[in-house]
Image (tube, rainbow, N blue to C red; front, side, top):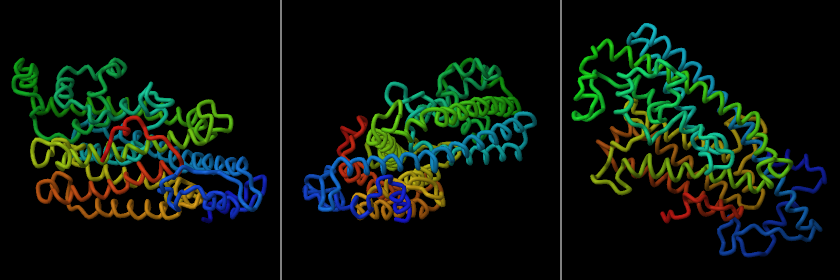
Length: 423
């Protein structure tokens, strides 16, 4: 509440904080304290202090805009900066490995990839604006798939590209399909063990003898060269993404309803942000957990082949990063960020403090559930698949709050991709 108090002090009309809370919690329109009553839409009506509904709406607008500004300043830009720096380090590590391959340099490239992916998995949770799909997301520039195309990767095609060496011309290689580029392809190239390939025996790569003609040393060198090219391409897209946020979309989101060329109201901006957060529901919960653990339809008791990280075995770390980023976005910024103000603060401001606390407790429980798993997700599936299913249930408790309570409290729209989801 200290952040909230600081914000109220900036209100030009000098309305006291108590009044702003009163018009929500005492409006008498049937909503309960957490916004989950039969009529949970937010009602703005005059209260006994004389604060009229127009001024109340303006106050809530300013609070929403403050949350959007905090998200950009205290989460998005710092995380993009961290990601760009990690990409620079990945370029150096992969370049060194390609110049003179050795076990030590390969290990350094692997470490650099892990750091990049930890940062990227935090950005994945909010793939709105430039990272989003063009034509489907406001301000979308398709940069997400350019950087990381999972689950659309194609390991066999990566092996084919390894032999064809088209990657030697980086500019030409940018025109190849995204499933042979990006961080997912780099994972395969720097973590795969042995001289085998991921193509079927009757594939052209094997029947033509192209792969068999390569020595172990050539395979190792060409994988390293390929990874170095991809690291440079990803580095370029990371710079594009950062610039797009800093030079345009970030300003448009932070000024929603206050001169923004994209968002006419702060409510629209908040709706765009919460829509992006459905990544935790549709991707983290459904694809990263339900599919491999067998919670969703699977031809076997479990489907480990559906795991996100098949070569580096970092699926658990990816889910942890998703959850931590979701928590930070709700809080309005990274842990320790001075003056962060987020969706949790908004909930407190409109009298839905119970929902704010419930988000915090369920997120803490889900993050603890990840930390409590021993070994990788693959090892968990093999030894105790129920533990992974329990984690799925813990994440579902978080996403249920997102899909129902949060949207109804602020009268936000359900994203199209979630409209048919009944779980």
